[in-house]
Length: 115
Image (cartoon, rainbow, N blue to C red; front, side, top):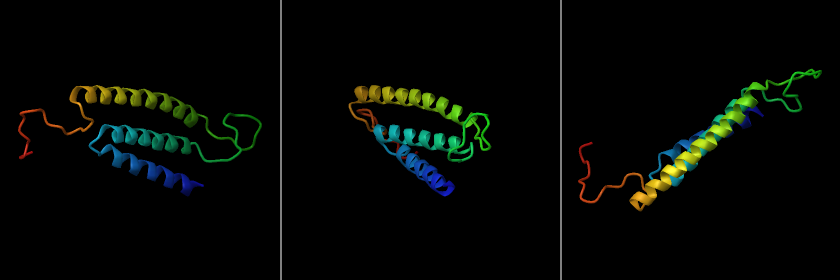
């Protein structure tokens, strides 16, 4: 179980980082979402992976820590807000420039060959 979760976190992180480095805005937004999913799974897995364990203190002999679950719920709300902000910024950039490429040149501007 731990190996599967670790592989899922690694794949989500690698894919998210790759998509963040693309030159179009939609893959950047998708990469940001995948990175937030990877962080959420990592935080959730830090509360010990147990099946059938109660998330709160009770009469059960095996319990799991409820703090990572609360942190993941908070992180989901924050990531939704950040994704909304990035989508609005990308839409504004698309409407202003007419394209969704990140590295466009303004008309009449010389490319920076030395940098």
